[in-house]
Image 1 (cartoon, rainbow, N blue to C red):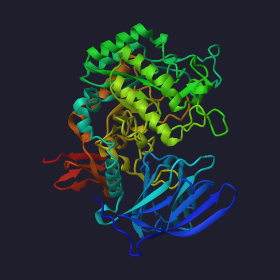
Image 2: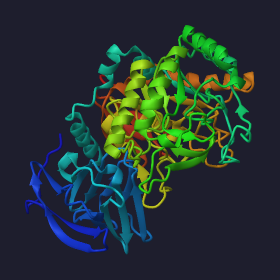
Image 3: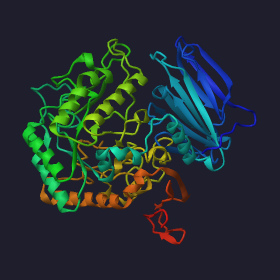
Image 4: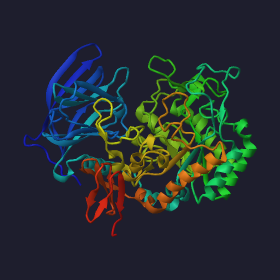
Length: 595
């Protein structure tokens, strides 16, 4: 546990700048009071009225080029105080998978925790003339305050003064809320979850319309044709190939099984896409996979909607503050609209999960996007939702899937849903930048990535570490090593690279799984077999807490787990000696506890 202590002055100083909606500006230096073993800044809900922006910059959150230390955010990106860096200003807005960030400078090491306004926050990283600073900004433009604003600052000292110490302390704070159940305990009475943890995730994109979308205003009359890559009968062939290659278990997630394929006409799901074989062949596939020993689940989305859907109704769409419809990207179904989580739960979620259960799906249902974007705020007077209220509806959505299908998985690791999230497809959308995972090739003030999310949640939620880590067994060794370094779940995807441009975030057409020919299918099954074998040997790491992670030599990282297991990942060009074992260059070795 972290040793908490205040500085000699009994408080810490911070600059606070407030911009009011009427244009007034207030600037002051405040001393943050001590509260138990930490310091706190608080602004009451009443006092937030009329505020547009509030920026708080602790004096310790500043450093000079060449100083030891770093800034680390909740996504795991780390910023070192490098010399000769160009003047840079970087913002991180709303992207807070955890309500925390960490600062380590010569003035001290602190974990900063901010709730419940995490999705109204922005981190500001800045370097100017070699001087680094870090601020937190609360942004309330067009936002009605819904709670007190509080930021707590926890000092860490000694061995705890590191990003690992920050992660361990945040984990302890989350545990104290009573919302976390260790994975090893959850699986005791949830056999479908246990199966998913201990077998690879195998996603199969079956059909989709072109992306980028040639027509954002789709109708049934002008709807573009689909790419059809894996019919329901062809997925039966995938099952046969997996068994033939010794992959004796896996959770199959069907993507684009629904009407008009992936993101085709959401929120409409049924009937199952006729070009894939329709309901009769889908039911056959579900039975065939289950009889073969595999779990099979659907990819759905109850948060997005397209006008081409027969179920589209503007009354269900979340509204902006000015009453306009809340839009998102243009994707397979055309212009995407964000559904209000409350409206969606009442109209679609419960009905859809009942239909999916009746089709025979069992396992960890995948409901897209919920855990990788901020909860959808809605200003519709018929179903108004601030971020806290929207989160409550998102949790109900997940719980309905758990109750009816067997579990809940989604795209990311946002911990506003941690009480119900079983599996996240990837804990970070990016982070390893292809084949050079530990080089200074990140954007802005991002100098690398550390597994702070995994230090907090490994042992509670299982995950793939990065979007790029999908299909890792056919990618560069440095990508594959991240599965080992971060203690994560082998995850595979047929036709991951579905976009027709260069913006595929999971893989490329040269690092993908295919099933168009028997040769392609066998190669894909061989790639999945490597992940299956890995789980037989190292899958136990998913049940453990990650207690420490650190760079022990240039480009050499040590991960330590709660049972004493240690993994050394050596990304350097030189062998690394650990105890009496030499870990080869560009390779890894796991030292199991008591061995």
